[in-house]
Image (cartoon, rainbow, N blue to C red; front, side, top):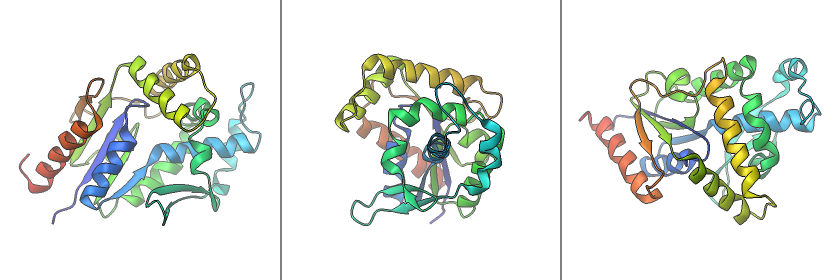
Length: 231
């Protein structure tokens, strides 16, 4: 069966990773969470005192990029793909608000993006891949057979993110989550290098009032149409 590349871009907390995983599992494709890669670099910067609320030593981080080794490994028990940074499982750490507050700033650095895009290109050489992020359809895979751009009302996204973190036991307030969502939107859409924009040939899906199951079936149908050559 013909294999394609599926690029899913969009704003934070729109459920990109969730639906990307669902589609990849159904089609038996490889799933790559590019956001996890940027989160891992942000974690590296935080743990090595290169980044904080008061300073950001971009020069030293750029010089240290060769020391950052990223790898996705499948958890045998859960079946989920998890992020490893320099040989250590950092999946839980990179999903915290502690990292979320800094990831967009790290993603603005051209040298960081160049390194990660090169890795992502290599991952998608053989197609049969679903990748989500901010610039997959515009920069990483501009020739992807299917491009999806996901959006939703900012308040609804903040509520989703708040509920998700509370379920994980994090001590967060809705106000700080809302501010984080707005901050990330601003940084992602205004950065000079690969800003978050909708590719001309991407299909926009506003899931403000669409549940996960319906969203999955909408995107799956689009993917199956592309695979079969119907569109």
